[in-house]
Amino acid sequence: MKRVTLFIAAFITLSCFAQVLHAEEFKKPLHFAQGKKSAIVSGDVVRGDRDVYLIRVHSGQVMSIDLSSLEDNAAFDLFEPGARGSRKEKDITGGSDITKWKGTLSKTGEYKIVVGGTRGNTSYKLQVAVQ
Image (cartoon, rainbow, N blue to C red):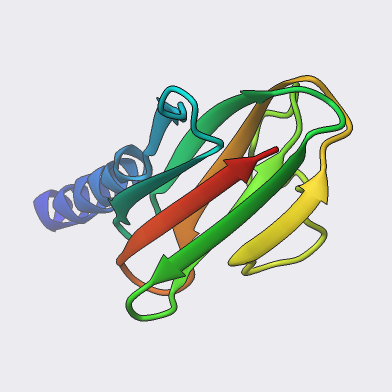
């Protein structure tokens, strides 16, 4: 009986640990081609993971973001320079499950575009333009 209890306790502990290890963030700088004002990237996100794109911009510039996915199950958050980009922080779009946004940026620095799935795994296309 002790062995069974010990086995169950070990299984539960390892299962929880495996879930923590599974949640990952992919961070990648977002660069525009020479002379271009926009970029398009495609990616895949496994449930629970997030892709984080980093983009350096100046205050006063206008950024537009358009995110599309085959099953309409991708969304993004946008965080100002200095923000960690955690799920508990409020992003600057003012909404949830955002797929399109356009606005004038208030700070100079590295913004974070955090892409994740709203349900299950997702494949997406992210278009970002800055003027």
